[in-house]
Image (cartoon, rainbow, N blue to C red; front, side):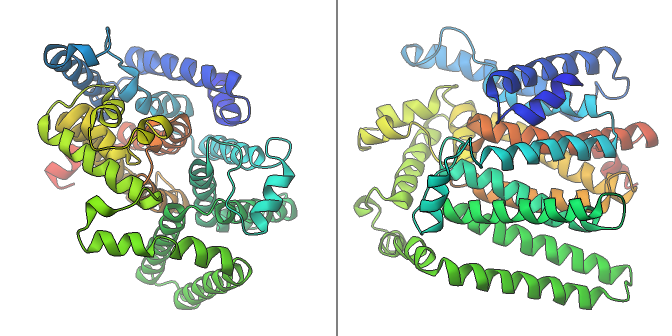
Length: 426
């Protein structure tokens, strides 16, 4: 539990402590599940972890036989394995909703604090608020926007609980508004279009789901609350757009010529702008995937694409070294086998969350956050390889761990399994 708390709170604020704590938490959690997790050690996450290990071994073996000069001396099993750290998170949370909220709260607080002085210079914020694109504390502007966008979604989805009646309500109101202001300002000053798109779509989907549910259960003020929410969002967008209109227009309009070239099919003439870099990287990845679509090229695949695609400029290897798309990186490295493992995990978590919510094991606000996060995560990972970096691994495992602990609790309480429930129609 101490390792889990340290991982949640310090992974970004003090990586020298938080990251080893996360590794310890994950190892001990996996051992605990295998030793004492009756009814859990046979669940899909554990089997999919085993499948991920086997996929990496198959890919490494195939690469060793096909291109030994490009393959590592030993398999790098952590590439997919680190995406299953949520097993440890879920075990130590023990299906406890209150504890999950506290751990998520610590993680959210860590994200917000690391974006502020002394971790981020105030001069950086001043430049950002004046209209320049800036990066804050975590790697680059895209990672900052992803982290702050995730916290923003959580604050919005759980606002009724955070702002509702109860102890410390004035303090909770102040904290909520401060957190919302930092997240919104941070997403704007980082000027990451993928995060803007992800937030817009995710919040709209969440609002639609919430409105449909309120209407379905016959809430007498459902329509009024829905229009109030939409009106508040529109007003917020107008106010923010008015303040940052020059920066927003410049950021959204600077790639219009590139988009026109792409739509015209002039791929070879696309310049190395932000969008152009992604288009060229994805084209190169597609060529490599076509050569080895089943087992992929191994853990170093993204580097191989950058280094050995003849028509790519050397600047791609020097400045980037990754494909700006988590899905393509997974496919080029581990082929359809790797993609299948992660898709199966996604299906299990999604369906399990739905079933646990229907059984009233997962609270409604947590389920709503899960829906919005899934949409946001799906979109932002189409434009950046977050799952290949520590910040993305951290967010993924914290969120999914909090959901899986409730799915496991539902399984233990009902004796059902996620996929078995679908098969038997229960």
